[in-house]
Image (cartoon, rainbow over all chains, first blue to last red):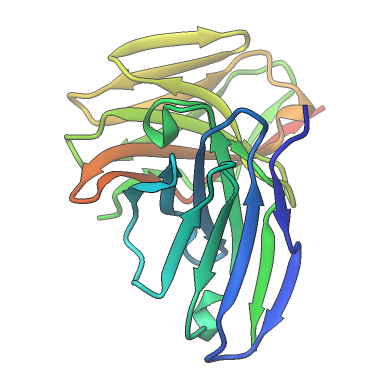
Length: 115
Length: 113
């Protein structure tokens, strides 16, 4: 079974732009969650989607948003990029229980650099 | 005080020894606790999850949870060089938007042959 896939793997943007990242979960998984990882702040939870609805949310500003499609694929959008948004963005999928209950399987991540 | 704190390490143990990784958390309402392993340049992978007080064993790994002391630990028995990685403690708690997952900064473990 194929793992979690994320596209693109690398991205360079400039301040003020917006960006959309994509995540395809493991087949049969319906929960998708997003994380940001930086050397300074470590791994931080952004939000989780299940059945096309945001089920859980971390402590990030409204510039960070996401959505999930009927096939469970998810996108994350960051608007008005700031230098501090440079990070590895990880997507994880799980069956149905989500971040509180299920094993999360992480994708390889998208490395975003904001210049 | 950070919400999830880990001994930052690095922690170095000889092959075959027991590695002990510790984590404390500040929110008494936390409900689920996880240990992730992250190899350098790779994504995290779940090692153990624990939800109730006590010990949970899976092969060479044992997670211990003490909610009264707000403490969770991971013991790795018979440590192998392949266990060398950063170990992340994660704690799930309720927030106004449902659930939130908070991670510690990680403990880097090196197992020396």
